[in-house]
Image (cartoon, rainbow, N blue to C red; front, side, top):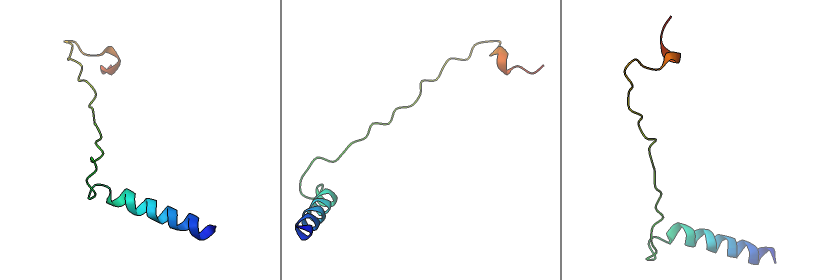
Length: 50
């Protein structure tokens, strides 16, 4: 039973590593950037020296 589980695990790992070469769609990750806030004249009172 352990050998069967090991073979299935190895087979799944090999499939996962080679799935792109087998014609599957590649996984796509979407990276988003934080929106840039407009600069306010006078600045942020918390960041002013003094």
